Amino acid sequence: MKMAIGSDHAGFEYKEKIIDYLDREGHQVKDFGTDSTDPVDYPLFIYPVARAVASGEYERGVVLGGSGNGEAMVANRVPGIRCAFCNTVELARLAREHNDANLISLGQRIMPFGTALACLQVFLKTPFAGGRHRNRIELIDR
Image 1 (cartoon, rainbow, N blue to C red):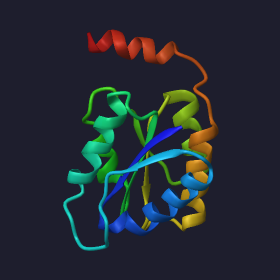
Image 2 (tube, rainbow, N blue to C red):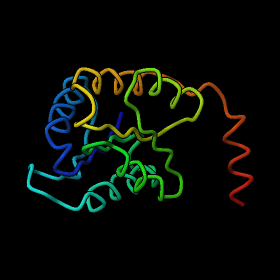
Image 3 (cartoon, rainbow, N blue to C red):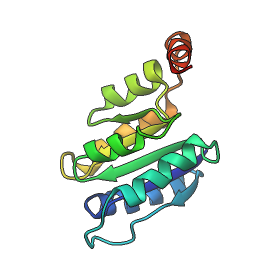
Image 4 (cartoon, helix red, strand yellow):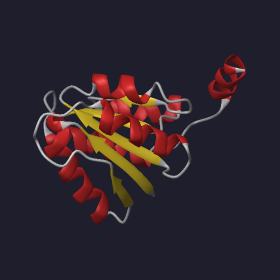
């Protein structure tokens, strides 16, 4: 799968570990930054990830920060993005199964890495269960 990933300084360490995991699993990964734990303005790194997924260049994406909330808010401003903030495996499963989420937002400061990785694994393997709700949303957007 082609994956886009980005973080601010507060999600940098998990981002690096997730990139390693995705590489080992055979995914193609584009890192949109940041490249250190030096403080940065998170929208500068999250918005490009969302745009890349929305354009269809990448199938799914991962955004990370301290809590993951701000990252999800920025990503969801991009038309065509359905970014789900997840801090449990169940939320990750439901985000894919019922909402067809194409981005997952994870918070480094609020969960251990094992939980973040488990959320990502479920996000990647869970299929969307059906299009009933998506069709209604597309009608509303017209």
